[in-house]
Amino acid sequence: MLIRTITASDVAAYRALRLRALVEEPEAFGASPEEFRSQSLADIAAQRLAPSEDAFILGAWLPELVGMVGFFRQSGTKRRHKGMIWGMYVAPEARGQGTGRALMAEALARAAAMPGIEMIHLEVVTTNTAARALYLSLGFIIYGTERHALKLGDRYVDEELMALEKP
Image (cartoon, rainbow, N blue to C red; front, top):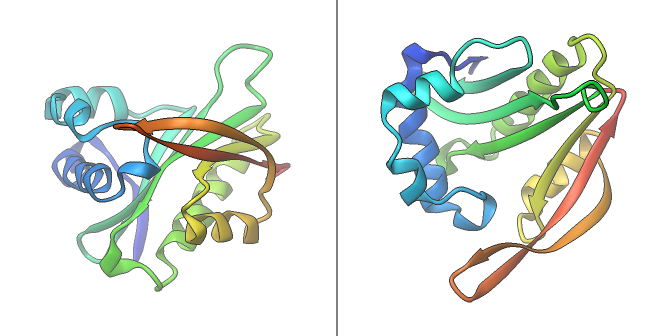
């Protein structure tokens, strides 16, 4: 398995996997497939995959893209010590092989190498027991629960708020 930054040249593979994640795991993501489908490849490349000192998206390749995780540093002088993990997804055919752990380990290592990062946050739906267990095993702690964080039709999903200090 190869873990590397997803770049603009990977935009088609990224779009396909992100759309798959949004369709297959609607409870796990704040974005909807319809919202994401409306974005052009050029917009995705420019808005999500452009090089940045404060953000990245990693991909797991086997040799096709089967997993991803994003990270961004908070903006503003008073918040730059914090970062956020987002968009974690591993395709079902690549689960149970350490793909998610490898993605998270690399994301945390890269985030920790950023000067001034002291804390990393993430949100996980309370029903995603596998992801929750992974994050806890990596040292994240639960510091709260957002009730009704997402609404799917007439049903609500809660999210646990997690943090890792001094990654």
